[in-house]
Image 1 (spheres, one colour):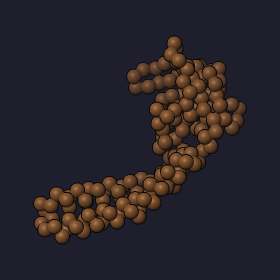
Image 2 (cartoon, one colour):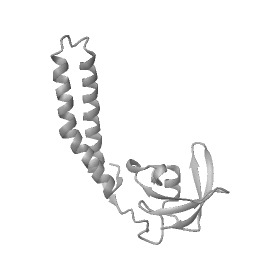
Image 3 (cartoon, one colour):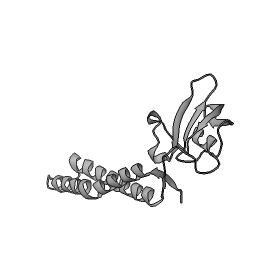
Image 4 (cartoon, rainbow, N blue to C red):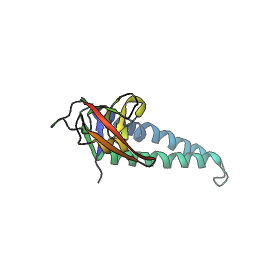
Length: 156
């Protein structure tokens, strides 16, 4: 079973979504289904089909969140590595690629990754490549579009 890395805030946010789906959303979909079934012929009832599709989506998302939260490993997003200054999930990192400006971001689990907010997945090409490395090292990043090197400027 895969471990999913989440911050405390990310875990809480997903738990709230799960609670909402289990309580409020399930009831809303059940009411829509009930109304659609009273609306006549189910075979030609578009509202019934839409409600059944929404029900399938909600139940699928509930299962996905259950699994994600059950396998979650809570990380500290404090930016400081725990051992040997090596990059790990939860570490803030500054890297530089070639002549481009240096970029800073936090390595985080895939469920919370958002590059626009400076949160890079540990499963992304950059995330995978720099995990376990230290400041000052140059690391090869392999992507579907090619390979390039990044220099780790700062860790933490």
